[in-house]
Image 1 (cartoon, rainbow, N blue to C red):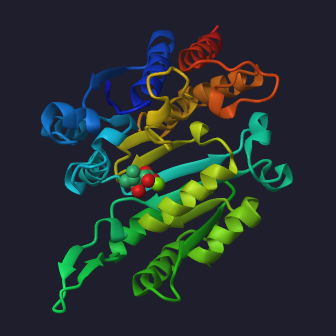
Image 2: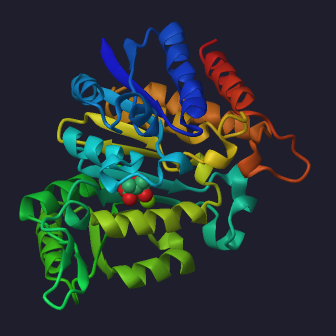
Image 3: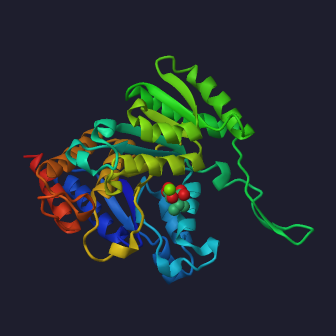
Length: 361
Ligand code: IPM
Ligand code: MG
């Protein structure tokens, strides 16, 4: 029996997570998927109850679970809190505690949504990129950090970009392994012309690449990568990069598809234990209205099935069910199109579950 910890979180998190859980329940009913759920508090929802965004209890269950499904964290009411108590801090703490160093962020343009991108259709049609972002190192976690007062009384903020060889190596290995199952190309993104830490990054990735002669490795400076992503994104297959560069580039890549409400993510540790979450945030402006797109969270469940629960066929079924509802013209507000009816979060979830169930008959 596999254990999944469900952390709905804040904003639209609970709404979209509910639909994704129904998808797993459907698989349990139809195909005997051996999965059980536990629920926990995270983010602002946890702060309101426990006075902290990542309670011990949540952390404990998360470490025991085979996978964690997280909705989203954050909202205006918690923005004034000190950094250590903000909902976002829970996300960083959870990632670090689970040791999920490899963050997989696919940017796929569904052919059914070709019109949603702000880029010309010929630039993005068929887009299928996998960004592998290092998630628990680099400048996000480097010490020393803080704000200090200089002798002249002026304050100075500082953070540290650090990467050890083993941290670079393990995420590089992931990227090469993933590329093997795709088009066999890895582009490593760094700023090796300026930053020593990423000069080492380039050296280690190159060394790891030597063990994967079947994968073509290229290197790109991050400024050029940002430009190439909007100029000719289809040149990329797998992109592997540092925590902060990956944060920035994955938002840009997500927008190429025009529909951030569609994009899932997986964060994995050495043993394939994972944290799964939609790329979009808590969207407080539409929370509670039942209009959010649940597909990114449902597709995160597909990633969970593939990477942590080792059920590739079930993963493919869920992805096919999502494609089927898009084919049928169902659209939530974020991906609305002229002449198509807009459906609610619940109706979209219903449709995916129905398509999934139908795939078994
Ligand atoms: C992301 C987010 C987080 C990050 C924030 C919310 C801490 O932007 O998952 O990309 O910077 O990693
Ligand atoms: Mg981000």
